[in-house]
Amino acid sequence: MAAAKILIVDDDPDTQRVLGYTLKQEGFEVLAAVDGAEALRVLERDHPDLILLDIMLPKLDGYQVAERIRADEGSTAHIPIIMVTAETDIEQKVRGLRAGADDYLVKPFHPAELLARIRSLLARFAPRYVETAPQQPAAGRVMAFYGAKGGVGTTTLAINAAIALQRDQGRRVALVDGNLQFGDHRVFLDLGLDRKSIVDVVAAPSIDQDILKSVLIHHEAGIDLLLAPPSPEMAELVSADQHHMTQIIELLRQRYDYVIIDIDKRLDETNLDVIAAADVVFVVMTADLSCLKNVRLVLETMSQLGIGSGRVQLVLNRSTAYTGITVKNAESALRRRISYQVVNDYRVAITSLNTGAPFAVAKTDTALGKSVLEFVRQLDRLDTTAADAAALAPATS
Ligand SMILES: Nc1ncnc2c1ncn2[C@@H]1O[C@H](COP(=O)(O)OP(=O)(O)OP(=O)(O)O)[C@@H](O)[C@H]1O
Ligand SMILES: [Mg+2]
Image 1 (cartoon, rainbow, N blue to C red):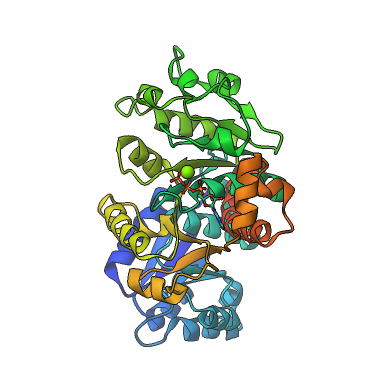
Image 2: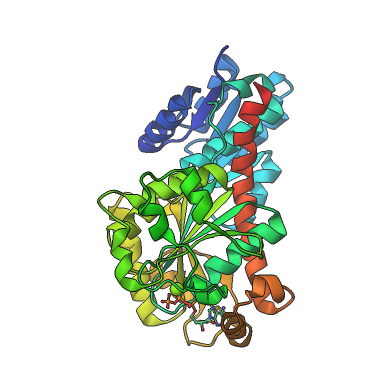
């Protein structure tokens, strides 16, 4: 069967190369154009099945190209278009969609997101090609919650987001307490020291699904938990050399829609394994100077480690607390967008902690409960596009 043809319209040779490589790896045929006028010529001549269209282009810009394509009478008028841009502005997005784009990607983006969007559009517009998608089992998404500083609310967000994803969105969720020395999940979820932990997994003769099933704890909130060791000195049994964390995460992602891991600010080998395995790292922060300093260092380090900035997202916790630093201040100091905000509500947060009854179960109608719900709805919406597209492959074969 012929491969779907994708036309990449971008004047930057690096972008052409990287996107071209990614798409070819996935079995697509790739066409290229470096400006709007050339895009229209290639379209006429080679009849691509989908266009990835950058907005900032020499000669005709992306909007004009999209408008011309849609205005055309011929067979190319309905070709699916994904607009690609550096702009995050809602106005730009609306303009792109009005010009006739079917979807929209903001740079920098994760290759998985690009592929998911391409597949989902092809499934709609050119279903004959969907079978060419690689037949991998749909794998769950791995999300690390990384605290830029102690006490910013990383554990609170990881636990309640995990529960909300299960209860509100019906997802299968595994939650891992990656704070191996001083994990708090037993306290937050009212579980005793007698409960099994990650130590029971790594001590087994082999790390496999059976041992995980016997150690994970099904919590009444609907999620499955992998707890941290009951005491700090046992943490070292989870070995960085043997990449225990990586092995565990890879097994979990086969069985769950989401694998959520709560980690602290140490950039040690174990945390780096978690970060490397994560599809998204949520860097949890509050609006204070020492946190901003840490976030800046973390962003730098992650980029040095080759973790693309699309995989790192900032979550501002206690966003409505007065600190003298506004979201705008923080964003311009970091030169990064804050992707998500969760409101300040100390009373609800602390009572839920002290009673071992997460607010995502008991207090969904509070400001904090709603704020976390909004957070997971946003992130699940982004992920669903990917999951749906992946699920199409085996179903149509
Ligand atoms: N959105 C919020 N509004 C008000 N208080 C919050 C919020 N989120 C967390 N808290 C409170 O902040 C404190 C620290 O929370 P939590 O233990 O989740 O942080 P952490 O970053 O995981 O800390 P640690 O460094 O100890 O792991 C707790 O008392 C918690 O109730
Ligand atoms: Mg914590």
